[in-house]
Image (cartoon, rainbow, N blue to C red; front, side):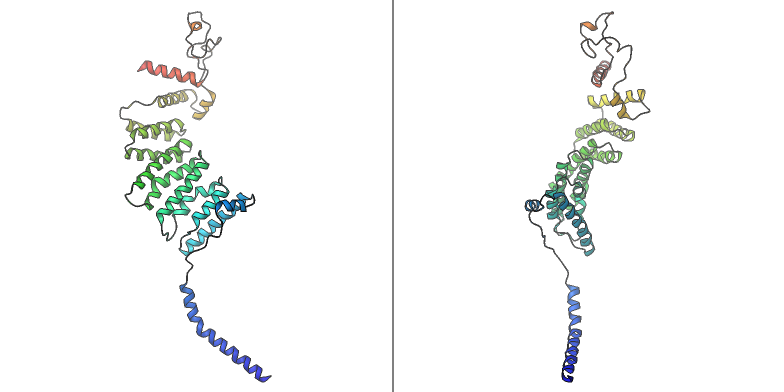
Length: 325
């Protein structure tokens, strides 16, 4: 019994001595070893879609949550999230109408710590954003994000002085223009206006004028319209404005005289103002008719300035404009 106890004590002592002797070396080795890469565990996107058994949106949500958590962990570890493009392909394949991943694609894909290939990350971000725009062609925010990335952020990760930089900036200007056309938001409109300056620098002055005229016609904010009007005056330099722009100016004059206390869009819904006396009597051959029924002092047809819709008002405005020139 005593012999067994002595053997146990000696075994314990030897074990303690061995651990004490090897621990400093193991601790030093463990501190030096760092996790440098991870294995992407999912199958290809087409297989993953089938493996979701119809719960595609739920699986896409789960993967997106994993992406956000992992991105934060990788930033704290100061290493790149190299599998992120594969996760994006999987999420987009599972739920192409999941908007949030598109909205954050440029930030997540390009703002990687210790990214070994920033140009490849920028190109991947552009591909993801273009997938988002294809799914949401009338989303002004996505067009704005896409345009700002191509015009300002993305080119900084591309080879300096390459033709690709100029191509990205030109595409970015077009995307910003589209964002301005789609949105009535004041902030978006002012950001889109910067595209006009880019077009002028690229020698596309006529394109800049055309964009600003379209933006003037769709914008409701007075401050935006005043800023656009000033820019047009500086750019046009004696060039004649388009008919659509002139009609928009005429509409503004009508709005300020007839309905200044209401938003501009209200007048569009209400239609052109009517004069009861001029619009009395039967319709002859249509609004603003000049046929036989409208001739003669005793004609019962409506007056030529009776505007039953915006089309008839536009024709009259253009006719008056031609008469004064």
